[in-house]
Length: 107
Image 1 (cartoon, helix red, strand yellow):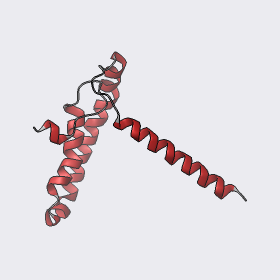
Image 2 (tube, one colour):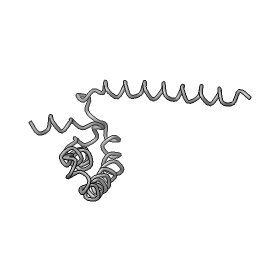
Image 3 (cartoon, rainbow, N blue to C red):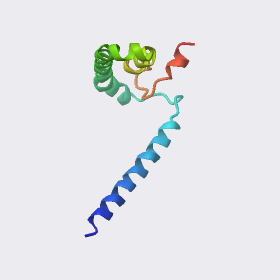
Image 4 (cartoon, rainbow, N blue to C red):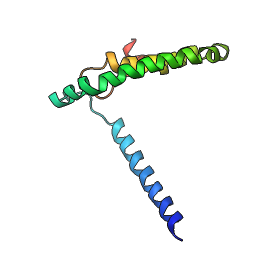
């Protein structure tokens, strides 16, 4: 009958591990040049997924437009659904896993 306690313990451990990996992601060094493998993986897998995310985000933005106009959140939804995937796909250096925030790029 200890199965619910085991499940709760396992979920707590997973949450702790995920939180630790997010902290590590914040400490990402952008001055380290990417490897050839990272660049190849970026071109073959990540960029096409980014393009698909941009297209899907644009379609979602259009569907959500009737709801975002009255609420005044057109700009923030466009940034989240189209701008960020577009930036990640097209303005990020090849092989680098993180893009600069949109505010830094627009300056």
